[in-house]
Length: 513
Image 1: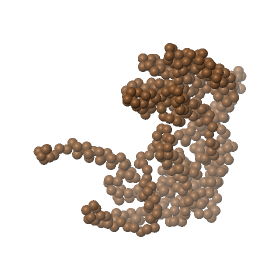
Image 2: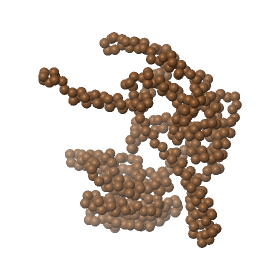
Image 3: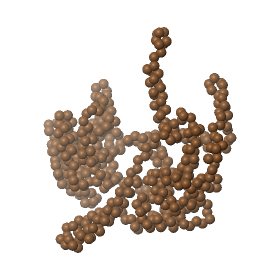
Image 4: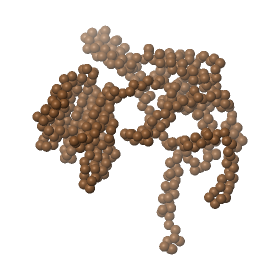
């Protein structure tokens, strides 16, 4: 943000605030001006200083902080924007150190970042997006109010925009994953201060167990699974299933701590060791060691890639929320034998609802579940979808199907004939998904349930049975929950119908007019 103050005024203010060192860029006339203050515990190497930015490498030995920080004041003049952003686009460096860009960029990236005044010109060149793409930077988001600048225009119209922001490259996000940007309250300025905390204090929470994809390729993991599921005992199948998953979880956690060290720490150690070997003069001795280190690094990088791939899933919901009220009422009335035998229209005349379920359909639904049906349902699970409380994703059941098959098939059969209870398997995490970019109230979240895959297998077997007869008993106008149909189809049909009626001309009507 521009200071609009000369170096003498800034220096006095810096001393009053208790900062030991500082750098000031004087304004040109009454506009512009930049400054940066730091304490003696911080080491700064300035790379470039102009009227629009201060670019520096910052090091804080006490906090193990090392990264590139660039503070920017974007030009507000349209005649200077092309040259200004052209210079910024050439900033991308190849040293791959953590990099953060922060300040008043005097640009918005999307239409929702502006409120009031003239509408956003969508055909205007998007300098900020081009800069972020060329330098591989990402918006760090924010907490607090959505707009960082405001001005009272004519006719009591308030113009608000998000002109100030913080950006960072992937290296920064990897090093300081919890970086938090806060838009503070505007006092004495038309801009609100921006506070960036690279390591905010957060509430500690226990780690949630997740079966890792990288374990599938380890022979010892298979031996652990086989050993945990080999003890049959005399318990019911659903009890065995729950007990075996818990036993697997306990043993896999212990095994993982011993055989899978922290990837990031180990990669740093090996990279440093490789660098030292490459600086050695005795090549004959170092080459085999370098080859061994590179092989281990490839393995660690592959593990890390699988780890983040498993956690970077995106799922899109097509059909919206279920009618929970209907299911609540159905549960309350599940013991009542209400049958709909007649429906009456608005004129009072009734018509009979004929049965659509044939004897053959009923026999198909009641037939015992086969091993092929259960295997098909299991392999239809998403391999790396977010698991439920037990932590075992679909890939676990697919990869170790031959081991878990007896208990899974036995439990499914017991469920069909009412010989088991599902309390242990049917547990769910409730996760809150934000509906808007910066949610601030509870109604701006959408709750979704993360069920155990053990429950999903049982539900999928039943759903596959029902799927075979649904097209015969569901009306053509019913588009939800039927393959190759979507709710949106009815909306499109209604739209086309009204469009046709709007264009249709009746000559009888025209003559009367």
